[in-house]
Image (cartoon, rainbow, N blue to C red; front, side, top):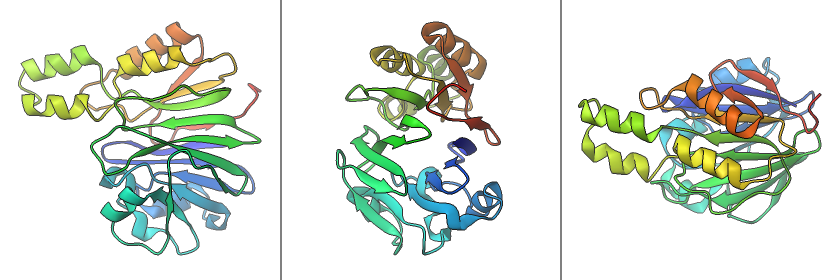
Length: 243
């Protein structure tokens, strides 16, 4: 299974899990034309798209998706999104299947109506955690093989930018109560059993409040795992086994 990153920032988020026969889209925050290009225009292999919440950098392109692609989101997210016949309501802790992907949504903590994260299982990827735009993870996850997790900011960088007048003080609370910091990301990783984890992909890094290389090195040092920074164009084998 291959992971393709099309966007991982406030400008737009979209990730693809793809093998020869099917593709699962995570987030609808970039132009569908970019999805088509990434799939070499073989869009019939798309089995669905998972949407974490209604903000435009995650759901702003849902009307561009063709009718045959189901878009899975919580009822709260659906109410806030523009209406689309593709939308299908899902609930936290209620598993469902999309192609060969088994999806277990879980509640996230963000300034949105009913945000979700996803625990994804596929015979090729094993267990994949997808957690973004949340300031807290309410549980640990068993048997993880691959992890896509937000590391949006580091507190000292954020505080330095506020002191320098680059970020309004009013934004501080919003950031702290809506995004996963580097510190919380590290704590969450250390709270989970990482023995079978092959890849940790850090997603949704802030342009001004993060430091990609420091984050990558710090997480690698703490976990001993392969760590990647999600940037447009990144392609990565995301398999259950290391090779």
